[in-house]
Length: 290
Image (tube, rainbow, N blue to C red; front, side, top):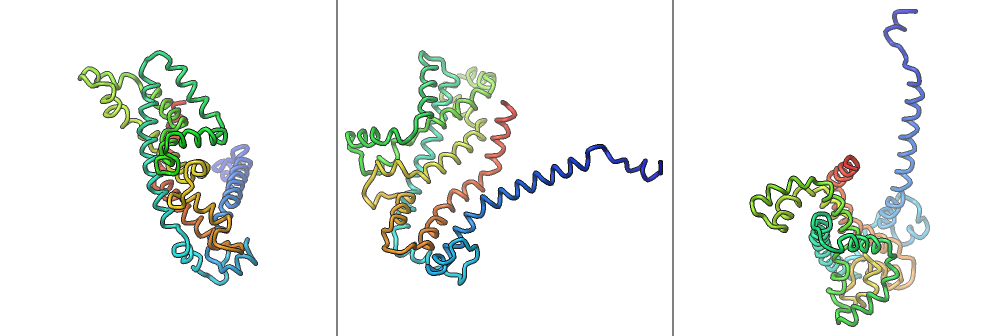
């Protein structure tokens, strides 16, 4: 055997592993392009003229480049009003869900009271109920309470979330009870222990809940159908649905509709990019603990 062969031994199966790795990355890149292509088409069509978008809707290259759709979105629609309503509703719901779901999750994880298991079972059951089943009951309750067609109707029915309570309960149960003993010895009550000791340790779960709550409340459409009817109270999804239904007249109006959709996507994309590393870290920590 030559000296070169002895110095560079080829491990068995190394070529197969390299081919498998390359094939795996190729598949991932392919599916990434498949998922990204609709967003590329969305942005491209928002920058086209009406004629170009109608003639070549799947072309990723605008020809010619036009910003007329964005000008019309801002000055010929109620987009600024919809954005303002969505920001107001989304911020209040997100803050409310993080606070209320955290307290409920901590109570179910740490406090011992009669019916605790039944309450948790009911919360899990609520998660399994399709949202469409609650449309008529929601409308009836809002109407009877005199909240229909108001900001309260948009916010209060969804300010707490069963899924968020489940997430926080599971995370709090992974925290050792011993970390709370020092606070109890110092005379801290239940809420002080929760707020000052346990909650700061739950930052990955809180960030995950914040992202999920912001995204779901920002994109919430079905609830607005049974909560409000005044155009002054429309949120962005409800307003976009109004555009898609042809409120601005005849024609496809692809650039206008897709331009509004692009603007609606930006806030959620920013939130996810800013908190992405915390979201991934929280998911990894949850996997390690599981």
